[in-house]
Length: 429
Image (tube, rainbow, N blue to C red):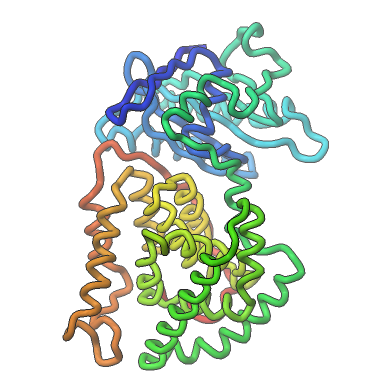
């Protein structure tokens, strides 16, 4: 097992030297801020000591037939992407994280994924970058696909360190890095209900769609629908902010209880208009940020059945508020889910890329503040009270994000498909 070194950075984070596969496996959740589940993870290494660089994550394709092209795409994205940003990697480490299915053991998972591990190694090798290590993490244990030494990497695998007990955990805590649970748990806070209440929510969405869609399609009524949407959203945020604080799971359940099916449906439909969504994006900081984030999460959970793709707007808003308030792992998860639903959703694309490339969200916050001030000035609004220009793609926001890019940014997004069966209208992107 090669040593991998995480140096002291300009931000003053402590120096860590990873000397074994066990320490490398323990470091994985701290690289992303959560425990990846059902994921391929690749990390670029730079320099003599293998300093961590760009990293990416993608869900493991279910079909082994997809593994060869996916491995090639991941290798190209990590290696060539790093080179375009100024530093071609000297090596790569990779992780395959997947829990056993019913009747399967962790070791069987490791053997089943072995061809994928080999594909990753050959894909990187074809680009002249060696893969120093590939670890399989499953069922609380890890296996090395590269280390032949049974003393450190036995055939039965090695148990992961208990959470919070390793040197890496102590260093991460000192540096202010927090692990927010597993990817599966984080996604569950944002995915649609699977409870009997989902049927009631779908009926409410049907009713709201029948009532609001004709109004949204008429310019003058559209302005009124937008105002009603924002007014309802503010009332819900106030209600959530005044509710007693609780733990994460209890808070989500309480938020769901505090929002009626009809209120949720009205705001979900209203947010499909881009101008209304952009106005809602201004609740990104200060005392508005937390209740706004809770509202967008709750609305994402309410996008049921044929309305599942309507979650793209609240998911994107949840990702934006999370990023704006410094929670980059949660932002990436929310934006990744939004792009899984609609890969062409421009606002989510821009935010996801900006977050992954390490931009400062202040550039976009400033843009939204200026938008709010300009809206209050006389002579800047159209006849119906809306901005005079409503292009489908906001060039001013794209310029703001692109201008702030740093050459050492990182990140990747995997392929995703669209869903059919949509109802109503989705004007906003």
